[in-house]
Image 1 (tube, one colour):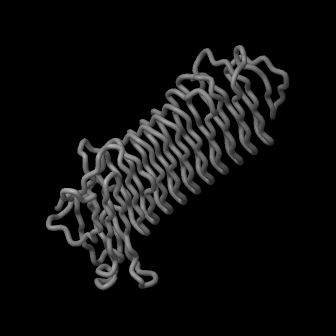
Image 2 (image 1 turned 90 degrees about the vertical axis):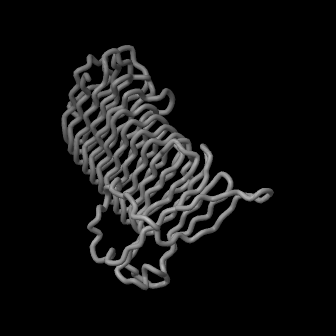
Image 3 (image 1 turned 120 degrees about the vertical axis):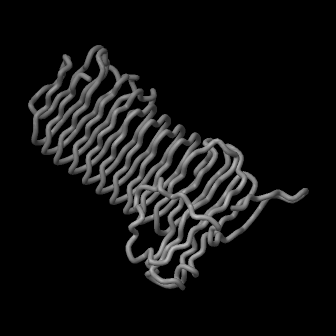
Length: 321
């Protein structure tokens, strides 16, 4: 494993193609695709390299196939480790992992061989300073995981799960055909997937979560004041527990399923709830301007920010936590 050195009077910059690592890598932490990669991993080559990066630096990663983990640590450097794999030796050798490191940033790319349908990819584990800016981290056909980070991030995968744990800062996380899980988070998060569940716990701040054909199940410890939390899905239930009401408001939408919202005592809010084919029930006393089996419009407590709930072919419940 090599580290970059800055020559006197020269800006730090390096363009390097990673090769075979001298030692076996400890990649057991990557939990998405395991060691059983099928025929595409008949040939495999490990890589490892370390580059200097101060806290607050920028990281870019572009991978076309395979899982990615980005883990925070207490070092002023980025450790790039992983494996490239393919079903044929010549394809694996043609595929390259390119790293461009300069003062304040590092860019990593998996270069696809010219062969079409190469049945190949790369699996990454990055260890980065805890305070970091993930300007763009992208992959496909593999899971993506972030852990123990402070900063901001824009991350994307497809056909794989996306997991975030112990993160503080603005976050845009997108996947498709996979679940999305966020734990111990503080900041403003925009979460998007399709054909997958969204699950969250220990959340502080603002959340905008969207999926389809999957449920949304989140516990918000403390919403931020200002813009409302938003939860949108179809063909899946929305289940939201708010432990502390800050008056930011809440919007939930689904179809062909239920909405269940649990709120703490002492909530002051305006409630609007509607369903086309289901019932509406609440454990809170409501001063109503309109109430029927399928629609409620009224105040909880003294009134306040809007709680806007709507579904079709499903019931709505507003419960005490």
